[in-house]
Amino acid sequence: MTFDLTPEQDQLRDAVRALGRRYGHGYFVEKAKAGEHTTELWAEAGRLGYLGVNIPTEYGGGGGGITELAIVCEELAAAGCPLLLLVVSPAIAATVLSRHGTEEQRKRHLPGLADGSQKIVFAITEPEAGSNFHRLGTVARRDGEGWLLNGRKCYISGVDEAGHVLVVARTEDSATGKLKPALFLVPTDAAGLTRSKLDMEIVSPENQFLLYLDDVRVPADALLGESLDAGLPALFAGLNPERITVAAMGAGTGRYAIERASGYTATRKVWGGRSIGSHQGVSHPLAHAAVQVELTRLMIQKAATLYDAGRDLEAGVAGNMAKYAAGDAAALAVDTAVQVLGGAGMTTEYGVATLLGAVRAGRIAPVSREMILNFVAQHVLGQDKSY
Ligand SMILES: Cc1cc2nc3c(=O)[nH]c(=O)nc-3n(C[C@H](O)[C@H](O)[C@H](O)COP(=O)(O)OP(=O)(O)OC[C@H]3O[C@@H](n4cnc5c(N)ncnc54)[C@H](O)[C@@H]3O)c2cc1C
Image (cartoon, rainbow, N blue to C red; front, side, top):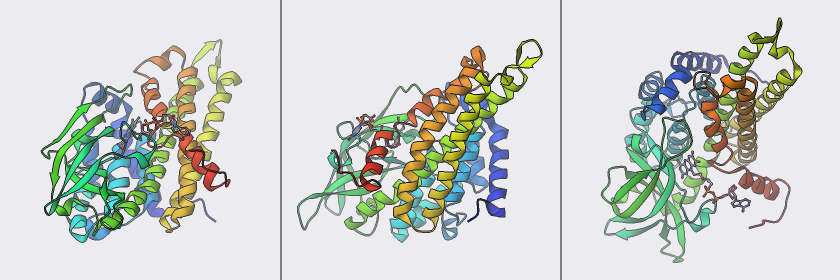
């Protein structure tokens, strides 16, 4: 057993850290408050090959795995730039395409995802279905050679920045007549696809949208994969990378908050010559948060290693646990940082309260802590399903 990164992974971590620090949290917040995107950072990360680390080399990527992509997510977040679209585009969409797309779809989409010139976002959540994906109501019906899509999606991130949205719909199985899931690559400018931006209490340059699909016509090759049978495995293929990279973002955000806070408390003096960090009422909550973040990082490393070794089922358990731990650790770290910074903690300048909304959302999305507890209770502890 080794806990060391390879020399290449080490280099990647240092290089991404340097890039993230050049931009920093100030840049991230400035973009968010101006209603703009982190276009420069995304483009530079793409040019340097960081957005395609997990994409096969024959499609312009780095040929690495989710371990490498988790490093990118964590280090950018640790520099104060937690980019949710890393989870959506390189982690979910690129994995789904690499594993289950047709050769033509891989050739068409992966090089653009790898160099950052294209983004593909992911739409599964629906107002009526919520956490219960079995209730998905977006339906795809045959329309000549192609398909006609109808339905509604909510909280879909980054639609305004993406060329395509990977829509999870249901189709009628010709053999059984039952509805089964299928994924469609829908251009974001397709006729009949409209969106409205949701007002979210999260300081982020990335936005969430309601999506309306009203008789959206797509050609036959918009269906992801060779046949309808690709739908279910393709849907599952995206889950582990999503859990692991979102956990890495949480761990990075936790590290960022603890670093900001401990730098402050080590030098701030209000009781004579001693720093406020010398008081255990200040230092212990920070140390506790640091322990939680470090434990989370270990679980992320385990989940990513299992995933990259092709051990999907075990990676599923570890990835869910890592995501659960990261949600709590990041929320704890940011809340603790705000507290020990005192009034400065609530200012924009000190750059921690700006993360409160994002880390709170990390306990809900992309899968809530309750649904992870359901998963662990059922699949690890052998309990009956409660719903
Ligand atoms: C910032 C953000 C970005 C997002 N981006 C995307 C995106 O890009 N694409 C996308 O498809 N979706 C996205 N989502 C949606 C996200 O995945 C959902 O919000 C999440 O899956 C929860 O679904 P819901 O909001 O419908 O909650 P609900 O399913 O309505 O659940 C509400 C509450 O009840 C709990 N609950 C529900 N069922 C059970 C049960 N059986 N047992 C115990 N507790 C239960 C949940 O844990 C939750 O706390 C995003 C959400 C946010 C906040």
